Length: 379
Image 1 (spheres, rainbow, N blue to C red):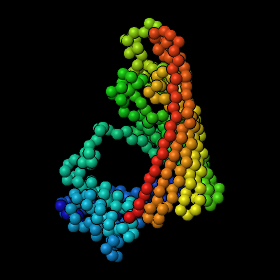
Image 2: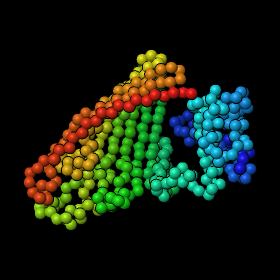
Image 3: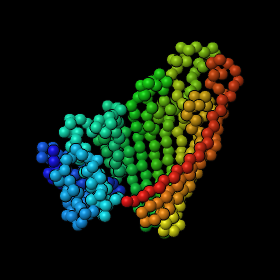
Image 4: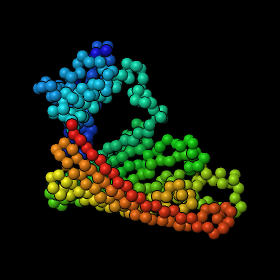
């Protein structure tokens, strides 16, 4: 099989608006072969630029349009063709729109391989762990509540079980506002834990609301603040109390087992939380970018639910982060990030006291430190 042509189709909605939405137009890459198989890919980039990168004539050995690189090649030799495209565009590429265009071609080549072998691409890439993957819809808020509700209704009718709405507006040269809302995401049940987690193994992602502002305080300093509401209370496996009416000695194995897994059975007892975030980014000089951040959240775990949360002691309330990126040279950079989660603990009467008697106290405590170092090289 040989590649006979590569083209880029430009798709767009009737009118492009000045809003933060990357789905108003798109570059669709089509790779044709002499056996009648056409691979389809998407280049998530400026579509006209991606098309130019594919169609461009040769300037010299390391500045060649992708079509010229690919025509006559075996489309099933994907890894070699990726390296060939990267090398042939190294003078004008290595990042940005050129990599976007290469990615679109790469997707189309995998599409050809899947069609040629009659196999899903996920199997060719190593196999799927689940037959189905739950998807959610993402869109901007409507101009008012009515339009937003209409969008949500269309998504629901199309079969989506979760939606995410967002908005970002540049209020001035120095102030940007943003907002997003995500419905509860219904996840696949944990079949192996259906006798442990409430609702027979359901463990959905909670509903959340995010509001943010970024202020360019000076040419070198940007300050950002975010508020987030996470509604754990809407997920029974997370929010159901670990205590139940009638708890008390003597406990039986059957009685304890029957208090797990059902929709009203024991959960982790997490409460909904409010999260506040504050971040700073400072361009100290052309080569050094400094970052700092602080995060404060409510503690979702009550004293009555300490015992059940020994396997998930998420009691940390405050995080501090520090980091930097330093340009070692024009072709390399060093990035470091440090995070410290301040120690916090919760104590309460042990759940086992209700079953076997006694006055024992359980305590969960957590603090964390993490350090990440990365070195990037452009070549």
